[in-house]
Image (cartoon, rainbow, N blue to C red; front, side, top):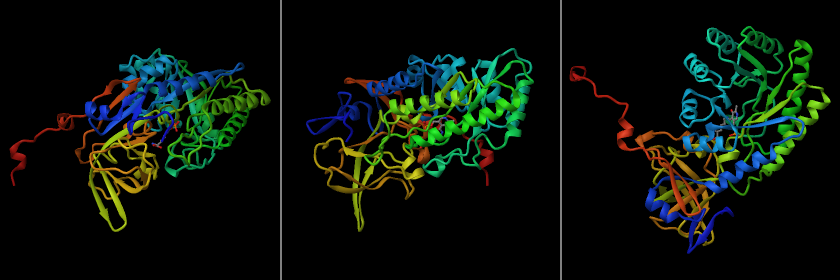
Length: 437
Ligand code: LLP
């Protein structure tokens, strides 16, 4: 169990908030964020991603957990915001985020999304490929909007992580390979045909849940060498380098991430070193953490329903499942589970934790250890703050659970549970005559 959790009378408290109280007041399944822990993590990035030689910028990757309240926190810490869709951009707008501080990503932004970004005054667009560069130039032709542009390049670093979350292998759908200099120059030339588009530099992101800091060092070295080539060939000064996110977090004891201070300082030091050694004109470096900001502050709480024994499994059925956390099914992701109502007992029970979806694969854990339990006990899953809520679905028409912050005993609702009405709000009945046989 995490050392930020406390046990009182056998029961887990998150930021001095009783899990029983959370379940009875907010019902389960429930997403919970420990607000002080979240702020502490954000402060670590703010305090340690600093350099006395370069400007530094932390851009929160909102895909990890996007909502109004989270964006308010991001603004409060002075971070920028990475959005990847019109929906995330709209969320930024509605949270009163300064849109000039928004970075718009995506490998296939639609014309409507690009127009929306232009009209709303998004500060920076990360162009993914030549076709997009051409569309952007055209769409921005009749406006006076100044937009900064970064180009996403793919440095070909294969980090050791699940293959679905690697992004910089040579055939990745994201960005242009740094080996393809001609296409990169064509994008830069295209951007420069429009005086309102300001080409600032390059972006790369090598994958997610990466523990080896050497992978980030290799990325920085490769990008800086590539920038030197580009500077020599084009005489264009590259002002900004954005190295993406992907910093690993602790889901279970097997995960041993470096401290955020170490991650930040490693990146800053390596960038300072390469930029000086290669005599680059780069003035600003950025990172885009998503998971490493929100994952460990987040929890999910379920109520245990029926129990069932099969020849090889002790099933615990919970009142949610792959609809509120797809990661175990999609990436074979492991989590730490605790019986929140019997948390100080030793973990002696080997169980299979299954959700309620009509899908045999709907398992949160195939074989994990928990404390002794009974039906109606509460089950707490730790480190679910990233890509849990944001990847939730309505399969089987299960309602997406609510989200709360907890702060020293206070429960702060931030997203309401979907209602049955919400689930059919966009649906319509058709005329009887269409039903006739
Ligand atoms: N920047 C870019 C361009 C990205 O594509 C991503 C993540 C990030 C930043 C943030 O990466 P992070 O710091 O969160 O690792 N759904 C998967 C993760 C997909 C990540 C996609 N891109 C999961 O649940 O593991």
